[in-house]
Image (cartoon, rainbow, N blue to C red; front, side):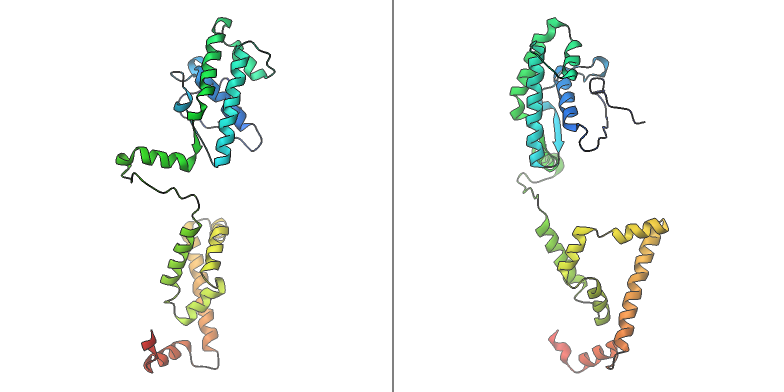
Length: 260
């Protein structure tokens, strides 16, 4: 069941999911939850012990977002420390957080928050792929991975190599009629790669909506492909030259096939 998010009452133990749209204050909320983990705030909703930055994992998508998130959390920790020092504060959430502690505990909370802010250079804030790379490197024996690996963030060259290899394996050996049918869709591996980068499953999804089952989608696409090949063969056979299959046989029987 979906419930509104209350940052100061949100449970900090177990598995929790927060859903949020763009511009709804995700970074602000993450920073507030970070403060609570540092202070072990929440009573029964708190984590089992207070945590410091190296013990709190925060992952995001891009390197730029990682640096911004790290800076925002550091800034938030310093603001909270100033609030617990008794300095003027206009953030109602920080004031509400401070009021849940007895005034005698404010100096200790401020010291804990300031220490966490100073420790942010070692905080576990990274992109998803960087964190996965770090785990594979630190647990090479358990994961069966190499100690030295190259982190590839741009797979365009790998995709180009895979598409060209696929084209060599499957397009070059095709008969003439089938090759012409393929070229009606893609003139070469470059066009095939461009289609893969856009939306290669658009037609499949459209068929899935219409038919409702994956098996029927595959059958529909297979029927379309067979129809395109049959149309190409019929067009070739209707031309004023011998049928494509006969022409191929004639070429091979005259010895020209030795070129291949």
